[in-house]
Length: 484
Image 1: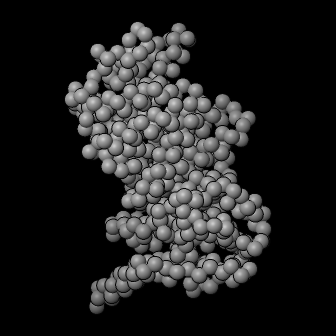
Image 2 (image 1 turned 90 degrees about the vertical axis):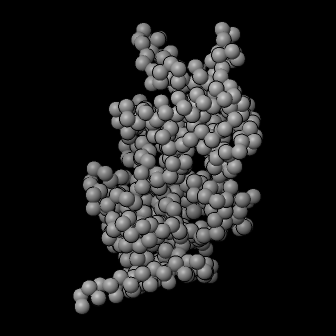
Image 3 (image 1 turned 60 degrees about the horizontal axis):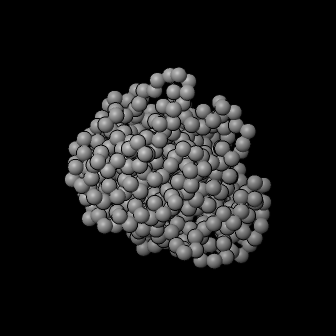
C-alpha cells in the first residue's frame, strides 16, 4: 500500500509545472511527509499523556495541524469533504499562512536540537512548488493514507524513502551528490565499528545515509537499555549540511529511521575556522563522503592551514581536526588524491600519515557511484599515532557496475572479512610507511599481485592541477614582489 501511495504522489507531481525532476518530487514529498509524521507523533504523545491522566501541550496550534487543515475527519473517521480545503483556497492557505507560521518556530524554539527548531529550519528553506491546489489535495489524500504508528510501518516507509533518494542519485544533474551506495556505507560502518556512547559525525551529511546506517548498525546489536536508546536518540549522531534540499531530506530520512529530533545543523561546514574547534567539539567516529570537484572561495580557504580550492581536501582537513585522539574515520575521496603532485595534495597526505594511522585503503572500481565517472577510494584512519603500515584492498566485483548493475553487500563481504585482520590476498596487500617516498608521499594503488592499477586522470583533472600549480606560482611571485 505504501509503495503504491509513493508512486501515485510522483505521478501527480509529474503533472506540476513547478516540479520537473526527481529532486523536486523528493523535496515536495518530504515536507508533506514531515507534517503527516509530526501529526502522528503528536497524536501518540497526546494519547500517552491521556493514559497517565496528564494534559499534552501540542507543538502546533490547532489550525495548523495536519488533522485540521490537510485531512479533517468526520465522525465516521473518513475525510470530511466539506471541511477539507482544495483548489486556490488550499494553495493560498499553505503558501500564505502555513509556511510562514511554521518558519516562525525557528525563532520561538528553546534550542537547535529540538523538533520545534527543525520545523522552523525546514519551512524557512523550502517552498511549496505545487501550484495547483487540486493536485495538492490529491497528494495530501495519498499521504494521509500512510501510517507512522508502528516500527514496522516506519521501517517500510524508510525503505521507500531511501528508494526515492536513490532515484535522485540516478537522476543526473546534482542528484548524485545526495546518494552514496548503501552497501558501501554499510561496509564502512562495519570497518569503523561505532559503539554505544560514542559520537558519530558527518560534516557533509547529504541525505544522512551514513548516520542512518550507523544508527541501524547499533540498534541491531540488541540488548540495549533504556539509557542506550535515549543516547541513540539524542546524543549519538551529528551532522552538518550546506544545501537546503539535502538538509530537509537528511532530517526526514533520520526521522523515518527512528530518530525523532536529528542533530543536523544547516551550515557551511567549511566556513568554520579549524583553529576554533575545541576538544569538546571533537567526535569519536567520522563517516563521510564529502563533495569533490567543487571550488571554494579564497575566504573559505583562509580557514585551513593547507590552502586549496578542492572542497574534498578542505573537508579532509576538517575531519582530521574534528577527530578525538583515538577517534576513527572512514572517508570517501577521489583516487587521484593518492598521487596528485600539487603542493596541497602532497602536504595533505603528509598531514594524514603523520597525525593519523592510515591503516586501510579501499580502492573502488569505476561505476561504484552511479552517474559519476570519478573513481574513488575510501580512507580508513585513526587519529593519534603516525602511520606504520597501510593495507590496501582492490575491490573487483567481477562485472561492470552501473545503474542497472549496482554495487551490493556481497561485493564487499570479502573486503570486510579480510580487513578485520588486514590479511593479504590476491586483492589485498600491505606496505610499510617507511617505504613511502618522503618527497611526494605517494600512496598510489599498486597491487604487487599483478593487478596494478594505472590511474588515468581525466583532462579536467589535469587542467585543475595545472590551475592549482599556476595559482601557487602566482602566490609565490606575489610574495616576492611584496618583499622587493
